[in-house]
Image 1 (tube, rainbow, N blue to C red):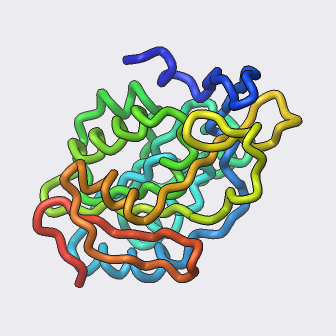
Image 2: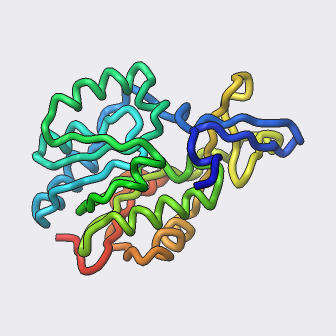
Length: 229
């Protein structure tokens, strides 16, 4: 496993030639409520299709874990160990671990080595915070491998947020944020066609778009014969 994938820190060179250190866990915005698409549409679908086990990849501060646990699903949160140790996440983790249907896996080693299979995966605001394109592909390959037949992949991102950023903050195929900090966040954007192409390349079918605003990208994909009901 490449060394760069074992920690959330990435040393890259910006468009201005300066060294940029990205901490991908710094993109988490603690305190946000669960997305209402998950609380309404997704939970309804999962119950209707007998989904039992859900993996929340890049679970951040665990905001989507709790509504899924409350709805009766088994939920596994996947994150870097450093993210689980951040104060807000650590506090939420203590609450989640009181629930018998909750588990966690450290990315990448524990997740890669775990043999469990899941009926659905959440990928919420994750791929666009990864500065290395090959790591995004790895995540999609692993999720495909770890999902059962006739399962779901839920993707959430946002578009048209980076237009006014200066080119000097360009790094990899996106931009780094918080220029005055020692460690920066990273964001990139994918047009909807690119999102579909990237995910469908790993044999997922796009079956539903659930966006509520023009800037949101909320898509449901299926592995095997899973359908929207």
